[in-house]
Image (cartoon, rainbow, N blue to C red; front, side, top):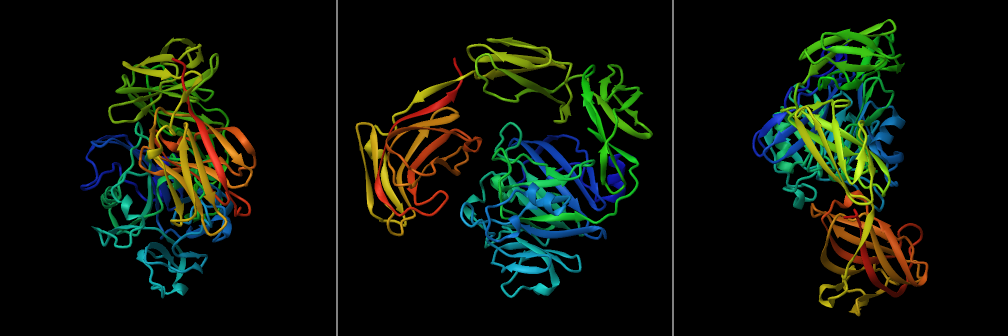
Length: 597
């Protein structure tokens, strides 16, 4: 039995297309989703849309709470209110969840505790605030709204609850939540996480990717609410979003849940808590093949590796199946590698592994609408080798397999037939052609230092403290900045504040700092292309005297173009706070940029 048939029989039905009323952007085209079975009562799907505003990728897990084997619960990071934070995939795997989503806003970088209600396994661990929450009743009912301080419904009737906000849909209508967290972010595009209840009782866990202009631009909160309305939501709420947005689910054939979305930090962010879905369905007979991928869209002559896992009817994993064999009108599968026939557009290919059988739907696409080149490591050293992956798309944005059907050429370097580029001494260019489409990629080779003069103009700098008006000052002379600070009292930070756009897409920052061996923490603060503040630690402890050059890697979360907004000191970046006064001086700023023209 195929995964698609299992999903149809045992899990909630997910829509064949996404959309919503205004202000959700008009959809120009969208890829055909492939709903996947997770466990009885649980299914998932990924959607790729092209809208008038730009591309969107949406991930959905649907849960039927009426399925007796389904449970929902809240989980705290490391099972503590105050913690160092924990990723959603870690919480899911240590508790045996088959799906989950991040939940509440939290005291990020400090205690990391959630800011609203927490109920786990029927125990109230944190009282509710006026912000939106999602709760699960002991009677398996689910509610979205505001839990009063007196807990209405009563706590003895609640099995699990997590905070979030703002509430976006109420009684099937758009809702302007008066208690929305961070209201200034209402109309800012973000990666978003949230949950919705449909009228039939189905719970939807949804994450929208963002901050990736080529793949998914994200949504504003009102647009997110409109998406929920398009999904038939009766009530819906957002959760903590941005880099915290994470949706996990068990991929059929795996033992554990994995991340479905692309976190905008480039990796999962440790968060405070999450809402998780569990399956108590018993293990059965290992008698089914779960194919990966379970549908093939390919150019004629391209090669697609097909793997299979052995599962039972409830989705429990029993290991990897031996290599697949099979043949049909659309092509031939030999030792797990499928090659498409050029003469057939669409067919189901019977495949086998030992005594187990399955059907592999195949779409042979004669030409591509678009072709992109994705480098695994986008900035090689001279003489270094990187792998390139050509991604084809049809007119609706469906990904089309191209392996073995792409022709590569290169300048300032060489490229093999299978897409391995060896860099020359300067920036290279690779051109790929497949299915009537062409992609061109400039590959920066090596790195170069771009000197900056941020301390040339004293008028661009000012001294600020938290709380305000604490002792200290700054001076700028001879392209050097001196920051006098006093953290002996209650001052939490002393800033040399500025607003200076920085060029390029830096991979590192060089900065000369004259230390005073006080042990304070030193950081720089920037705003990224989305207007978000991002802090970069320059030194966890200033433990040196005299001048020292700092070389600090710039994380991908900075999302250039960036603006330098402050250099600042704090009492601690780990360990006991340092209550000291002193002076730090700065000069010799440079950005390490990729490429050698």
